[in-house]
Length: 506
Image 1 (tube, rainbow, N blue to C red):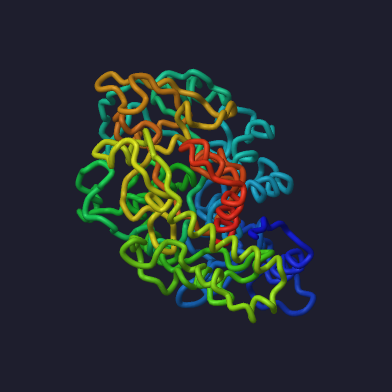
Image 2 (tube, rainbow, N blue to C red):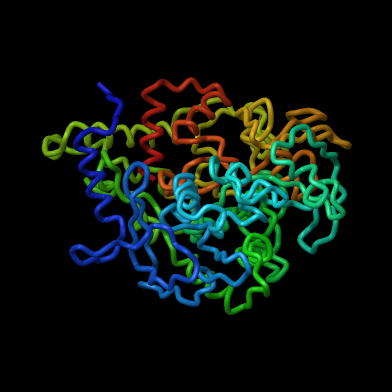
């Protein structure tokens, strides 16, 4: 009989073992391991293998071609007045993103003096009193960074786009949307949206060109204005920049407040680091190493595997764990019941992810504009279809309902906007839409794109809660519960637990 798995005494012992190795570097007896939080300008050496304890086990980072000194490296060096560097918001211990747990720890240690809490985007609005915790509540409680998008939208050359919708502020808990300097009434109007930092790793997959066109829109791929080459479209939540190089320049001028532009040499150094880095869960507190007993989980699999393959045309998504369900009886007898039950659960979760179908409806990027029909029957793997990564091979953005009513979770801490289509009504919401983040529409100016967001990688999830672009799922169970409600899937309690266990092993 299938059993749900919870942390047991055996799991606790494994967890303690993982914690003892969390620094990932050879330490002499009695030595103090490096702080898990990387401050700019520390000058540490980034090792070839780096392990950190997370909520359910150990996350591992692998750096191709061996260790790398970080002293003077532009990813790890602050060059602006606020003391920030790229690493400030892309922490190794948080799978190169940010976890709320570590954000709160930094506030307890340093308060508003830490560069993470810079007024520009580490607070709810720059006009608020920056020493107050309440002014940083979206980052502290939900892991959200403020993104100021120009209104009206601008194209890649900076020219205004005439949108086919209007935007009205319905709720403004931060005060930033209606702020006379930072909001829509300003001389230089902006819309503030609040999003999770995306992980900076595994770019062999994220940059892979899975299609020669955008199948979600039936359009050619966007071209990088610098190189003239097509781009993957899977970098930023709202596709506001086309390439990693453009993302670096955008971040340097906004989030980092650098006093001068990144040079080509700086960009080359950052690209070299980011494209060498792989991150994934390496061990679970209950199940042990994710590459044990014939399984092929962990970052090493990412390091050696081909990039950007569609699971249906190559290695089935999450089939890395199939061996756990086929463990021989003699080997099972050597393992604790908790370990066996957890590994069986992960293998079942992978199978549920690929094979349990449900009706997907009213989701722009899936059911429209060209679409597969509305509704269309498929499984999680329909969108999360890339082998070893669980992101989408196809470029483009999807509206899963995480920001748009009536599907979005109640989030009174976020702003609420009323979008009114001035041209053709939205194919699923009609002429008026309530949203906490217009998403891709703030890039294109198209009402049909309201709420569309780029899907993320599913690796290293246990190290970087909360989830979704707006942090609305506080834990892995929250992800499963959202999809179960959104698409009326009807998962059993055991199926939900199996999917959670799968995700904590990724």
